Length: 192
Image 1 (cartoon, rainbow, N blue to C red):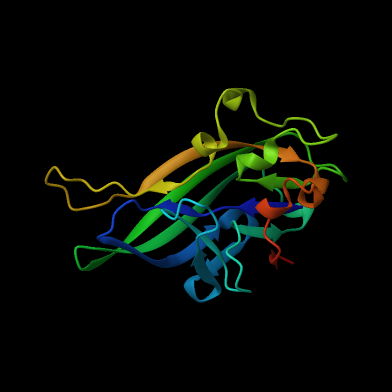
Image 2 (cartoon, rainbow, N blue to C red):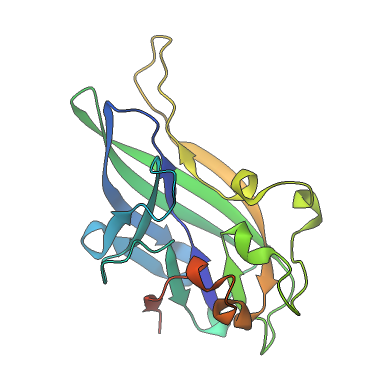
């Protein structure tokens, strides 16, 4: 099976620097990536959105694709990102935790999970896969992301974030569809 994650941090501030993605951890799948394996890119027209990706190639891909054995599949899992930022001349590590729950069943033709809701749209002969709770929302409102928000009311800066998302199982062929191909990373990280 394949899992497409998209570590995103949105930084609208000129005086805050995103220094790097320190780690990605998904305990349920045995995934642990460290900063020396990761880099940042800006694959979207809005350059405030910074995306973590594998340190392979030069293209600013949208996220990371993991290939894991079907036997490791879990319907509930946690994704943890650690971001390094610089705020007011001081380095800070921010934790972003996403609780994911999967709906649908893995089959031979449907064994893909994507954290990018753009990939859930109906395309050509493939049906819409949006969970009921997201039917009237744009993908930008669904996709997990860390929005940097400075606490100006006497706080000590920017704080950690937790959120939850429901992910549908989608068809494998979506990675080959002309409309969606650019939304999936070319480089993959294989978990044996």
